[in-house]
Image 1: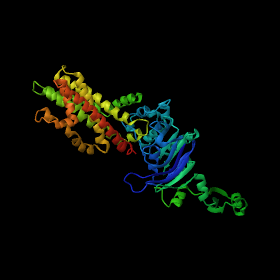
Image 2: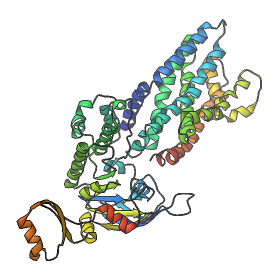
Image 3: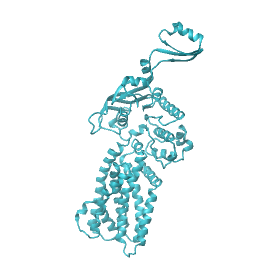
Image 4: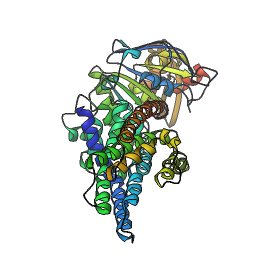
Length: 283
Length: 232
């Protein structure tokens, strides 16, 4: 569990704070998404949470203990998945995992099974310098998992991955959530955030503008309309108010009389809501 | 301690994989070739100077190369979020390079001088000098990003190494050099092959130990400020 209260941080030599009075909480078994454009303060917040930056104002509790009171043992309890590959290129995938596992108290039961989770078991003994970017990213990802921590920090977990591998990584993250792990995800990818996160925070200029669940956000910000596409000689599109839909004679006539091609509620996308709330684009 | 020993084994593997061990062997062979080809009967002074540069200058350069490899591959950002402690990271690399320097130095001494010398003082000279200069190397490399930037820093950090040679070759007889660590290293190397006053030897050992302690404090601060915090 992570609790952040009134967190502010100013870099030395900077006149203004990079993170301003942030508050949030992530319970066990929940995925929290941190969304914001570059320079919004996402990385700074993550650096503070993983104890790479100190001298912050406010209070942070991780697994029931003040962050300031954790020593290097802290890193046995967290797993960090980075946005860019960071491996010893002259070592094999297996050697990289074994090297990093020397630091941790808990070792993986089987390195090969771990590599197999992301389809790298056949490449265990290949030097990482011969890996594609996607393979390196998958190796990054499982390295964060191998000491079975309780808390995870994933930075753009599907960046650089093809759709099949991105799907697999998202499934593993959802599996971790089901096991009761606490997960903090930083991403630009609204589809990932929508699919993975129980709650998302919109961060702009170091401030959280909004925290809510993607589902509620879409309901609150979407138009209560249904868009129907049907075939009547040629494709026709028509919109209906969702209120009183069951008694709408026109709607009932169309679904009874014509071949329906598609039917969608006009909910807003997370990206639309982000722009509406913050006045900023995500990139 | 078990983590440290495991890390030390991995640092040896990394030194081998990144060809640092190969370069160290090639340099040792070159030094031995120089010693064998020189047409002098008395080589002890030359042996001392060549061996002296191995744990000092080479230690400084090698540690820079290793850290720059790690910076360029971003591995440091992954290392700093593991339970590894600063001293484990710093000393594991320092000890690994020191053990290689010790082996190379003994081969050079056997080849250039023979087997009759004081192994205890020699080991102390290599170990203390190497640990000190690898720690200084960490300070030199902490703020740089490329090897070119590091090359510019090498003379700034390493030129003091040459200063005690003025005393060694009796060009000067200044006590000023006693406040810089290379003087202490040179005294210990000299004591390995020639007679040295006990007072000089005690000064050399104590001065190197104190220098290592002070350098370690500075290195740790630099590592935590410039390497850990800049890692991501």
